[in-house]
Amino acid sequence: MTQTEFERIVLKIRPRMMKIALDFFQNQEDAEDTVQEVLLRMWLRDGLPNDNYEALAVRATKNVCVSMWRKQKLRRMETIDTDNDTSMDSGSSDSQVLTQEQAQRIEQAISRLPRSEQRLIRLKQEADLEADEIAVITGIPVRSVRSMISSARHKLLKLLK
Image 1 (tube, one colour):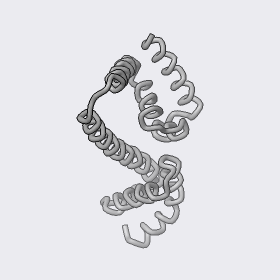
Image 2 (cartoon, helix red, strand yellow):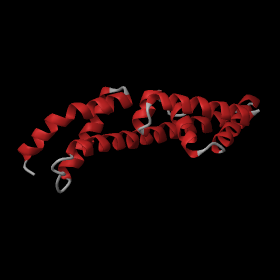
Image 3 (cartoon, one colour):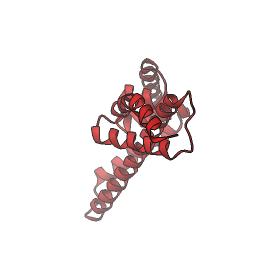
Image 4 (cartoon, one colour):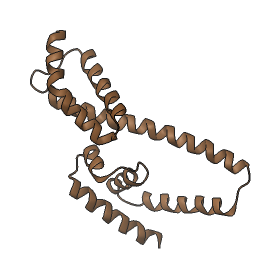
């Protein structure tokens, strides 16, 4: 593939890729990073399928969004862990112990849910994503995502009682 052909393809698919990334991150910088990453991967690839480059770009954009989100989540978790370590050293209180016990109970209850519901609950609660963002990640319609999250929350309440 020549550079001219690639540029022509990029001009055609970039707006859709940006929309997907912006819907996912709600942040222009992260969306730009995602699209640039996908375009770089596409350029470095030996060749693009002649008729399906747009589908490839859309799928790759979604996958890179999820990967970047996971990396960001891990960084936040590491920051929280170091913050918790310093606060525990300065003197643990009963409220911290209770909070940790509640978190463990909730995590155990979540682990008893079916995998699909576990994933949705974690995306909603831990990643603080909206239903439309979850729909983009999972490929499930937004209405179904909302319904499944509601059902999973009801199951969690029953498990926690």
